[in-house]
Amino acid sequence: MIKKQIIYKTYKHHSVRVLHDPIDASKFDVRFTQSSYPTWSVWHKNADELLMKELVQIYSIRAWIFQWLPPRLVHWMVIGG
Image 1 (spheres, rainbow, N blue to C red):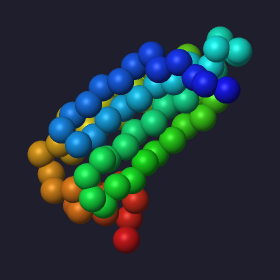
Image 2 (cartoon, rainbow, N blue to C red; image 1 turned 180 degrees about the horizontal axis):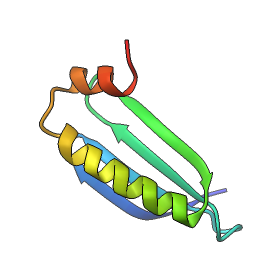
Image 3 (cartoon, one colour; image 1 turned 180 degrees about the vertical axis):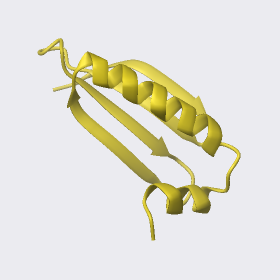
Image 4 (tube, helix red, strand yellow; image 1 turned 30 degrees about the vertical axis):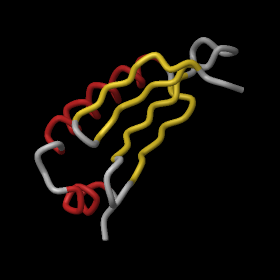
């Protein structure tokens, strides 16, 4: 099933993406990723609308802060080790 992208925000090499499920209108997927090496991704599947709005706000603030830090430091802060 192909999901519709409704929100896509980028901050340098970080992105926040929200996908909407066309079959179930109350389900959203939220993805927070880093595109530069080392890459990582945090994915929340089947979130409801309130959780989606909360996650988008949290991840947008984090991405705005992380854009000025080195990618390896951000990888260590998000993923660890």
